[in-house]
Length: 82
Image 1 (cartoon, rainbow, N blue to C red):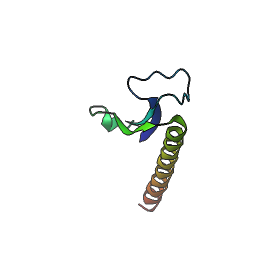
Image 2: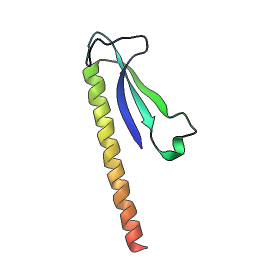
Image 3: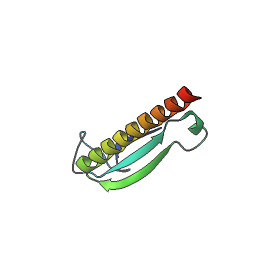
């Protein structure tokens, strides 16, 4: 499972959440148990304004939620007919 977050670019200090004077990046954190020994986070988008970054992170999180629901449904169908 992945969680997408918005963070200020390294070296930038945002005065408040949503400060448009700095650029932001989107990070993806892998939260699965199997990811404990691996690198858990990755930067997937950089140099974005806050509104665009927040919208994109929200869209990524929605898609992740949808895919987990589809996977759970498929798994329940498999166990029901097994």
